[in-house]
Structures are given as structure tokens and as C-alpha cells.
Length: 391
Image (cartoon, rainbow, N blue to C red; front, top):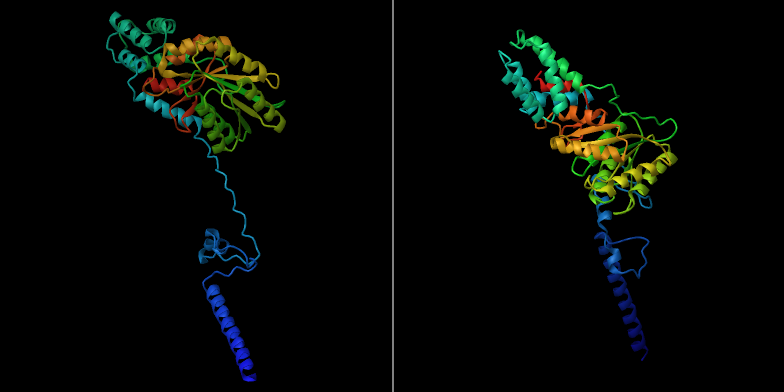
């Protein structure tokens, strides 16, 4: 019977040896297939042993091997570099070229006058009609025609070059003004605040972004205030401009009190030592009394922190006399210090430049040429007049 006992013991030992061999072979195959993960407990679920996409990607030769136990380096954040805008003279020259090749009413009237061999009463009448249709206005038109009649012979233009020089001189006297056309900013005692007002659709928010880009390129620090809280798209658009040029945009919830948002923006600028705050305001229907009262409130609340040094009125140059109506209403609500005429290209009636300056007694400071980042230029009377004259 002893032999039976030892036969059983031998069978058990053989079974243990076979089982051990199977386990060893299985583990070796598992390691060769990439499934071995040191440090994971044996009870971990199968899904935890599956290599993640990140682990597989990091094991590729192109990405470089990472030593065990050493965390991969943090990704380097990149910031978009703000490109310097085109020089203002270059942008204004672009407008001059557009005006010179355009067929707007003012250019047509001037061309007709200069091309006349003999200036008759009918020629003067047609000239006046062309000036008025260019949105120059009745007053400035009468003034210009009277001066030209005095300086040019009623019998004709003896010297076309001299006539053109006289016309250029008289046009410049209408367009020019003594006021400073640059932004008047002083941040020596706190942030310099610029309020931007105008009806929706004139390019107001876009103009704020372009002005901010100009200031950042000049080395100025800027905060944007998205106080047009009635249009979520306006705040989103301004935020996008801010992200592009690396400045903070202070905004509130849709429908929030615009004065509160403006106050927060100016306060943050003051507390962080920022030089300029550009505040975009609501522009719902200009004939609504509550909107005008709201703009007045925004200005008063801002000035509890810092004075509003500039209030820019944005007007669409293509709206003509409607733009003058808007200008009157906004000027009654806030003290407008400068005008930005957008969409002033070859299709616009150039006479609006003179008319709006006469209406408000403040200068056109900037002109908008289109939707591009560089399509905003400081207004230059000489380049403007030369473009109208086709020079």
C-alpha cells in the first residue's frame, strides 16, 4: 500500500510543476505583448491594464522616450504676437486711392467744374446740386460756391492747374478744423477712459477692438469694458478682440446694468495700473429716451472712479443726413469729443465729413475703410481732399 501513497504524492508534485510552467509561459507572453504595468495591483480590472492613447503616443520614437517615474514636461503655452498696424499715413493713402477712382457725388461735381471750358450759370447750378447730394449740406455748399465764384472768373477757367489749386485750398478750409484730431489721453493720475457710443450697425464694437489694437501696438496697457450688455454677441466680439491682442475684457451677464460693467472695468484698470480703458456702450435705437439717459448714467458712474477724457461717436458714413440726426441726439446725452466715420470708402458721400464737423463742432478723428484689422485710419484732411480731387 505504500507504493499507492507515493504514487499520489508524485502525481501532485507533477501537477504543481505543470501548473507553474503554464503560469510562467503565460506571464512571459503577456509581458511581450506590452501588457505588463509595474506598480498595478494584481486585483486591478482588465481595463486599467489597457495602455492609454497618451501612453501609446509617448512610446513612439518620434516623440522621445520618457524615463520611468519622470513626468513628461508641461506643454509650453504660446501667445499670439500682436502685429504692428500699418502706419496711419499708409491707411489714409489707401482711402485717397479709393476716392480718386470712385464715382461719388462730390468727386463728380468737382470733376465737372474743373473740366468746364466756360463756367456758366448752369454749370454753377449743377455744381451746387452735386455738392448737396454729396451730403455736404446747404450751408457749406453755399459758402464754397460763393468763395469759388469770387476767386474764379465767371467767363471760364483760364488755367486749369490754378483752378484746381484754388478748389483744393477752399475744400481744405471746409474740411480742416483747429481741434486736435488725435486721442487726448492722460494716464498720469489714473486710467484714461474712452467711451464709444453710436447706434447698432455702425461698426462700434469693431472700432473699439481696432483702437485697442492700435494702443497695444504703441506699448500702452488696455482694458476693454463690454458695457453693451443687451447684445451677447457684442460682448463675445469684444472678448475675441481682447484675446487676440492680449488684453482683459471686463463683461457682465446678458442684460446686466451697463453702468455697473463700465464701473468694474475702470476700477480694475485703476487697481492694476492699466493706462487706457475703452468702454463699448449699447446702441439700441437712437430715438429712445431711455437709451440716452442710460448713456448719461454710464458716464456719471465711470467718473466716480476716473474722468472720461474722450467720447467717440461712431457714425456710418453711408447714412448721410440720418447720421446727422444721430449725431444731434447723442451729443445731447453725452459730451462728444470726436467722430469716427465708418464705411467711408469710394461708395460713401464724402460731404458728410464737413457736415458732421459743422453740426457738432468737433473733429473727425478716425475713418473706417472696411472690416480688416488695419481698416481704421487717423483722419488726414489733405489726403482726403486729394482723393476727392483725384490726385
